[in-house]
Image 1 (tube, rainbow, N blue to C red):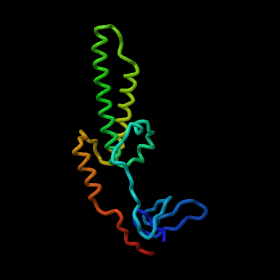
Image 2: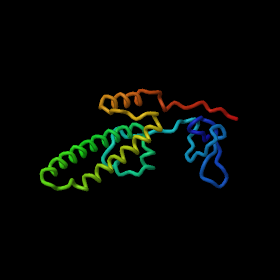
Image 3: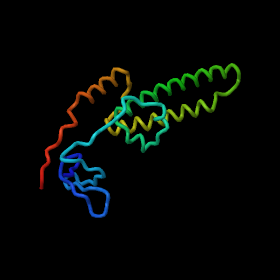
Image 4: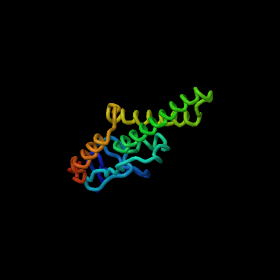
Length: 159
């Protein structure tokens, strides 16, 4: 029997459409589960540089842990870029040149990405983490792995 992945209620496919309706949750569900199964949540334990170029809608689909890892990466790269700009500005004072526009653009790009990820996390967590040390991420990952077993089925209450 097809069930809602959120509450476990039986769901029926609506006529001539590609979704199910859950009367309890009052939502449309594209992928119903079977017999009270919970939705499987997958995520990567790290972010990579390719993630920097994901669109905002793509980033909004990331697991919270992936976003925390990505924010850490962005902050590290942004700090490096800031220090690079500072060194170039000091050198430019001596030589009379102006700091590289490419470096400024990279810094602006990283700042905007940082703001996007921070705002998504703010919506999810209610705050923006000040620092993302390895110990924080390790503890967070441990809580995910040791949390309530998500493979336990929900009780299905028939109508």
